Length: 167
Image 1: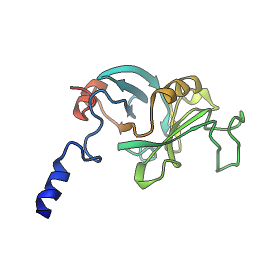
Image 2 (image 1 turned 30 degrees about the vertical axis):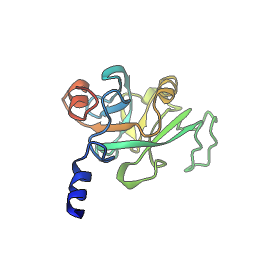
Image 3 (image 1 turned 180 degrees about the vertical axis):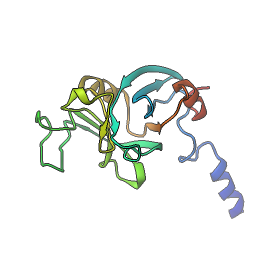
């Protein structure tokens, strides 16, 4: 009986570590090859944004993650810069995800105080966006949203189908 329960949990579509999201759920994809982020909702690519990623390929982790922390005007701990300060490199929003077993406070999608960095390979591992764009995305992305980070020649539609966000 215990073996059957274990097998059921592993193959069950309700198992939380599987290929979420369900079709229709919000889903984010970052392609490090093009430095582009796609916002997918209701099985459609709704918006694409230019982003900045890690200055080396290893800095921005690849895989399927979950947005677990959200903050408006985030505090920048490294340099003790309060949220809302024009010197804050995190910009106006933070959406932290659980890469490499972290708690959503190390890796994130965030704004920037350096708009000219967008489109470049320049960050310490986070995904940077223009402040107005991250603000709009922040309001559409609930905690628990799945995030796929890849370096791929596949289209966003192909990746979304592969990961269950589109049929």
